Image: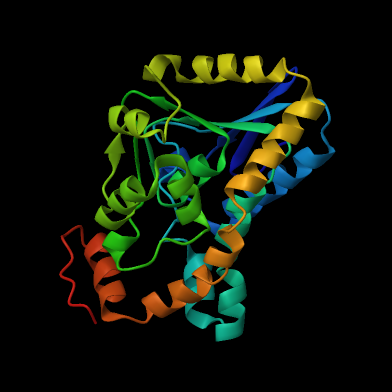
Length: 265
């Protein structure tokens, strides 16, 4: 199983899904997001695979949403408000597709995982990080809300205070900090990252899959019981924030590689 921007490798009960846009830092364009949804759903028919590892080709896990993707720009600029709202649910659908997978999932975070990349990592059951990895949510720094059902996942991992710090300050946190906070479950050298993730995968793959997957679904159901009530309007909130002057300033500053000057308008 492969896609234009995805590579899948299998070894007995463990599959490794590799985001394969290394020249673009594995940024999430529209096609890659559709491919991730498709592969996550395809694993429903795969009884042999018990653990799925997600990682990035090259030096980066994923730089998040590809703001230069022509299809994304076209849809965001030209669609009617109704169709724009539906299109903006693509990111949340991708994150939920990973979160709802039957198999145990592990993010092997190499390099940076920012924005949508951090959302993918948070949606996995476990996260192994390279000792030089950086993870962050830059959205607030760009004048937009954190969407893609990511906020409750972040709160569940690191608690309310640290989630506020991580999301509002919009900084990339290092591996040592993320391990201390509980966002990462394990930190290893970059050279040992994939081997360590596969070792963890082997441990979980050795468990009886029926009951292991029952426990996963039950824990996720408990942890995410209020998520839909909280995040059902995150696309609407994104559209609202996108109408502000601060949003325009945030995106412009990002593209011009300068600090934004927010005015609260």
